[in-house]
Image (tube, rainbow, N blue to C red; front, side, top):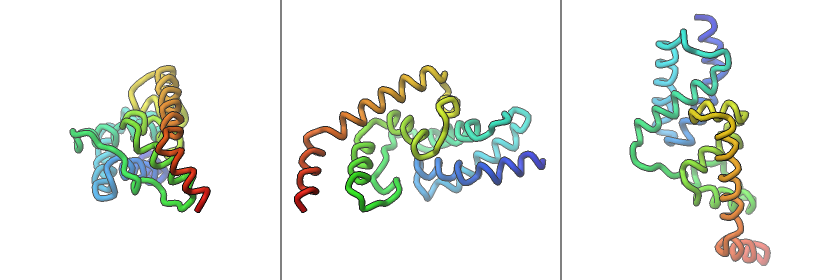
Length: 157
């Protein structure tokens, strides 16, 4: 019981952040609560590094809640007036949901590759391939003519 309390205190904010970034603030609390309810029921299956396991549960709940395609909106990410951040957020939002998830598990949620692979239910090697491809697509999105013209107008203003 004490072990679960420690995991809850340490992981709750990160599970909530994951749920909010994938399902929005309105559903995040419900998904996070259900994640820990399931974890409590499966306490005997909880690994010593519980965060990736918990994020995997949250991911399944998000998918169950939203069977339709979910895309990131620019408002789903931290606000910043810096043009580079705005540009990055727009490029990220233009990617597929799968690419967005791979990139945000590392960048916004701070998981190691092995942990992110566990969340996605794949091997670390497969995750690295997905991450490499997602980074290439993000780079390509950042260098599209749309972003080039936005950069030019930003520099002249």
